Amino acid sequence: MKKFVIFLSFCIFIIMFAAVFLPFRPTITVKNESSERLYLHFDEIKHDVEPTPEEVDRIVKSKSDIVEPGATFKLTTSFSSLMISGIELNIGWLTGGKYSYNAIGGGGQNFIITSKQGECSFSLTVRDGYNNYVLNSQKGRFCTMKLSPL
Image (tube, rainbow, N blue to C red):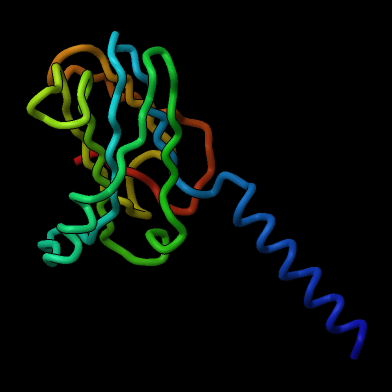
C-alpha cells in the first residue's frame, strides 16, 4: 500500500510538472515597438455570449499590464479555457495613456481558442498610432488547443 501511495504521488507530481512547465498552451507574444508605454488589457470570455453586468464590472476594474517601449510581454491562455469549447481571447491596448481620453494610440485583436484550426503561437507587434500593429503566426510548436484570429 505504501508503494502505491508513493507511485501515485509521483505520477501526480509528473502531471503537474508537465502542465505547468511544458508549453502545451497557446501563447501570444506582444512586442511594443511604439515610442510610448503600452497599457495592455486581456480577458477570456465565452464566444458569442454577452457578458453579465458582474463580468463587465470586473473587466472595467481590471488592472492593465504595462509594457515599456522595446519590451515584450507573453500572454498564455488559462487551463480552464482549454477545457471549455468556444472561448474567445480578447487583447486590447492603449499607448501613451492608461485611459482613452489621454491615449495617443491603441487597438485590439480577438482570437478564438479551438482545436480544429489556427496556430499555437502568435507574435503581435504594436507600433505608434491607432490599430497600427502586425500579427505573425509562429510555427513549430505543439499545443493542445490553437488560436485563430477573428
